[in-house]
Length: 68
Image (cartoon, rainbow, N blue to C red):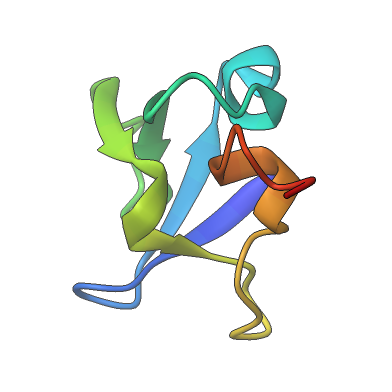
């Protein structure tokens, strides 16, 4: 799955989807999808990621108390 980094607008390939969907995990493993070579894996804060369309991540992915 690809998301957009809010700080620079670059696409990020999310490697650990389980962490992305878990509201108790604040960051996910991913790598920038830029250039011709595969980029190194790094950690990205979920709060700094968006869908490529500009839409925010679902609240149930980022807030453990989303039902209240």
